[in-house]
Image (cartoon, rainbow, N blue to C red; front, side, top):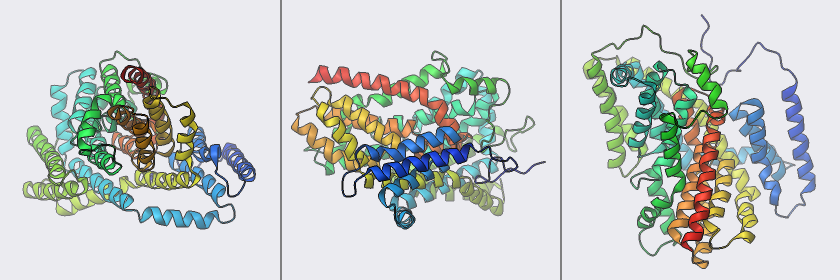
Length: 494
């Protein structure tokens, strides 16, 4: 029996190359050298600043390899910035990113979350929850609706949503022939798009503080955030699309059609995915209802502790991990060594998504130095009117967040520009803030290397590109409906 491969192992180690990769590398290198020669030192990069992100998209679609595509994009951008010393610049930026407090927070939170989920699985509590849900959920449609409902209930943070919902539901959806790609789509659609609609979430706390800091309102930033919730159109549209998909009113689009056909043929987990199917003979090792209690109690502690510590997921997952260790040891569900091994295994399973997110942060830093965000805003500025402002803010910021994968970092740069512009034009601030948050949630939802998308794919048991390609048609449909909505509201409210 073959051993499962390491997340960073070559996908096909015994197969010789076809030469396509070499041609792709040469084409990218030639393009970057040409752009470097075309740029005059000391001047703005202008449209050239879009090149690294476009290269990431091309390489990712051509190779279906997320980490490698990001690395190629980063190197391309660094060659544009420092052609004589791009290696030194790479070392400096990488070190700066790894010392960033946000990256350290991500490593701890995602690693501990992986360990926490692994303890639930190793103890058999996840399996017990799945068996009980199988008794309650009788149809495929009900399995999809219950997944969406659980995702809406876990609104406190998109990371928690992505990992907890997928861990709870993937064995159930497997039994009803739902592809892991569709599961990842539902999980991801109830992560960031739902979190922005609830004022008791990490997104609300972060953006409310950002709005108050940038004088977007004379009162509390949270009050402006709450006023803007009805205008966060992408969140509402994404939730509506998920419900239509779950009840079967919206057909499978694009690559999702092939994924669902494969699942109906008996293979819900795609080839190469970081997960193993559940054997038909698998059964809970304890009384099912006790297993459900042992599954839900740690989840409740995780959510409650995070809320208690002012929406701090790191403190919440530390408390939940300690609680789960004590709970399982008292009941002798597993030995201390087994639970600690599960925590370490959970950390290891998060290596690939964490690497993708870290390299995504490096790409964001490269794009910032190239001036990509400022270029996008300047490019749309000549077309601004009060009526068009919300739609153009949504479109431009959605493109930037999609290209960079940074749903939060981009707005540290863009809000100080967009808010004064909206105030000068006397535009309705809740509508403009709704456009900004809609753009942020779309980028987090649609970008295949954003933290939320990567964690949704990891938790659901498929690769980031498998998730990204199957989800994109739905995200694009949501973006078109959202942009149209902002056009209508812009003319109606100004």
